[in-house]
Length: 208
Image (tube, rainbow, N blue to C red):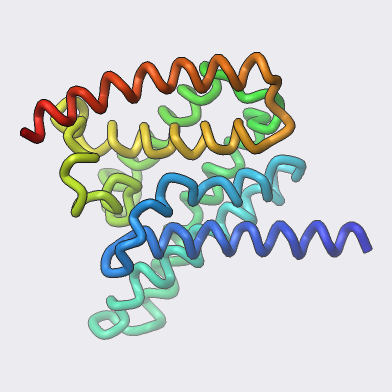
């Protein structure tokens, strides 16, 4: 019974992440969802085996992209779009697999957060330049109507914006999970506050 409850819970969490990603994008205008859309997925995979983590990540990606690319069905048809979504969702599956292999649930640290965010950005670059050129759905794209929040793109393009969007997700996860020590939580929060304060000042100056 516990196994079925865990599976049901993880499926619900993965679905929730996928829907939150979708609703963060225009025309839904709930952009703030992008800052914690990863959190349910992170909880879903934290105690799972790598292959299970891949599946839940893939499910999140599938739910997100099936809604995100649905408008293409009027041009290419449902069959093509479904194949496209099945393919692109693998990106989220692989990322979840990597997260599990990195043991993200075993005491998140600043080094681990930096590593995970870097891997995500590399993945976005690969998805946009090598793996078919499908860069739509980047984390940064959810914020394109909020110019104040994307001023740091002057420093590193939309990839830098995606980097820090994921960083915020990981901060929230590290605060909520019991897998992170109090000492590490304090270190992560203090360091992140310093970084985001600097970036906020830069953004305000650039935006004026």
